[in-house]
Image (cartoon, helix red, strand yellow):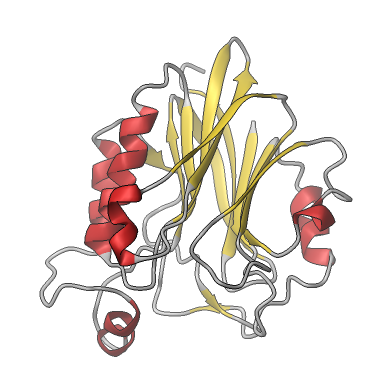
Amino acid sequence: MRIATWNTGGERWYSRTRGTRYYRALFGASPDIICLQEVPNPAAIRGYAADYTLVAAPAPGYTNSSFNHNLILTRSPARETGEISFPHMDDAGGYERVLWVDVAFGRATLRVYNCHLRIVRAGPAERLQQLRVILDHAAKHHGPAIICGDMNTAGEVAGIAQWFIPRYYHWPARANESERSVFSATANTEGFQEALPLDTPTWIVPYLRQPFMNLKLDWCLFKGLRPTHARAVTLGSDHRAIIVDAAPSGE
């Protein structure tokens, strides 16, 4: 099975995903499941997704509705779909719901979560709280599961990051560990493992197409599946896509 996750960046001034060639490149990799965040126009995807079932949900919290759609596309029919909300976190404003879908995977039912966790007016504590809500939901599912998407996790707060990150994140004054390490360890407690090495950057400077501050914002966490090959691919937004080949953990 091949899964891909990518934050398309919407139709911001710095995003180049308005062109169609990036979608062609992504679909050309023939993923069985595709999770997309910040899609500007879900209808435009259908031209590339004739062989897929499309599960869509607008994510609340943005005033600009042109880039806030989260989508899951699957070659297998969707058995059940739903969303996870964070009502207890509404005081921070604009938390996005997590979209999930159950699909057939051999004799099992695979559950896939498509996430876009909070960055504005939020920090490691808030995102960790969101992750725990998702993990609690996943614990009720009996079968393999994937939690993927743009988690907006910060890296080490050092060098230029000491100036940059606290202005966008609610970063504690003193942090002994990087957010990605804590995020990964928390997922590990529930049996989820990240497909990419934790030091793989997934955020890039638009147009320069180069990583900046080694930020790993995007994740693809597996449980009950064994990643056999994982890679980060630069397409057209400020996020790199993650494409992972996986097999049942027993194989």
